[in-house]
Length: 517
Image (cartoon, rainbow, N blue to C red; front, side, top):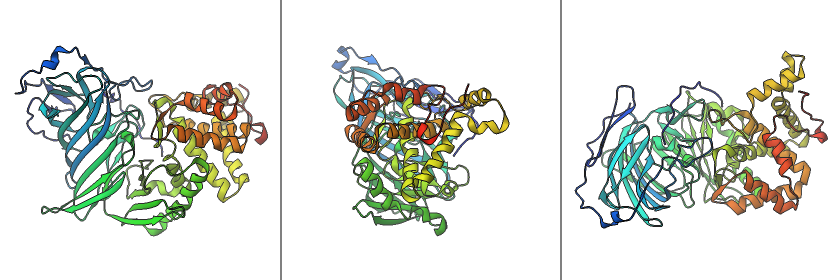
């Protein structure tokens, strides 16, 4: 994916030795980067399919914010991964079987793999030439993979896990240490730091992950636990399987001193939580109403979209984290002070972000706007509309710059300061996609839409959007089209003003108006 490793400051909320390769090798240099030796010739005889013209699949899917992420040459269907993690050293050994369909005649292509290093690459069982540099594993098999053909990549890899600087965020991505284990923080591009991936949300796939960890530690991951095996070497292998496709960054991965707590919502959704045994019960009380929250959102957005839900809560000191990993949201203890709102925020993403995933990263407001607005819906449900409106007014005042008037008497100056700090929700910057605007102005956009069309149409829009794009991808244009289909009105200009204009539109019914600027 060609990472850009600019050093970024911490914000909100090792490389190991490599096994000898059959047809290529990669070794760490002194700076922690990778130097690559050209792949050698495999022992396989040349394939007659080389007579078919193939392309060298360009790196990157062409995402507007991160054009180097992923690869456009193939579509991953299923990944069967095995991971062995030594938690004392942080050394990870893995193997991935990646089933994909070629979207063009492929002569060569790339797979995202960062921090760790490959040792063997096979394509359809035959050794392939490869090189590895800058987070890109480039694969060059003897035979052209023809358009529409299913093919299998088998990749062995290993190394020491470590966080890294993402081009997209102001905090460290990738594998993080908890008090007694590890967990993955992968949005937007961190899955490739612990397994090979086509690391873009537009390429969703099903997964089967077998994670081996030293007992008595426990592994947790997205999907359903289908097997647990105690090895003679003291390692325990936990195997998880996802029923529905997952965007790579939404794969949950954690290892720790977990206790597994199971329950069920009143409507019958299975819940399994993984709580670190060292966390105080009082801190975990914010999860007591998970079942009620699931059923509450199902009434408004449609049935819960997956086979199971739960929270993985780790004892952390380095990073305040909450991430909507599919079927098993990830929480660090430093974030729990936000209370029930952070719980329902990550739960809401199971509908908007996980089931309906982004097609492009510049539409992240669809994820975060819905999740933030769900917090306000929960306030409305549990405390009343007046408390919801207070939160909305506070958010509006921040986004519009009114809160900055405490330090200046000039409305134009305050408005300009807000615009510099908070880009419009529909136009996030590549180095700051978690800007508060995608959360707060995204949520305000949805509330303004609700006031414009009424409750009946608003929640029908949410349900229709979720149902139409479930288990796939969508963008802002899809949402605007859904609004028109449900209401019979073209609200493009209305939504564009909220998402893209520099000045905040007013909300007259709440007495909220932008500063003069």
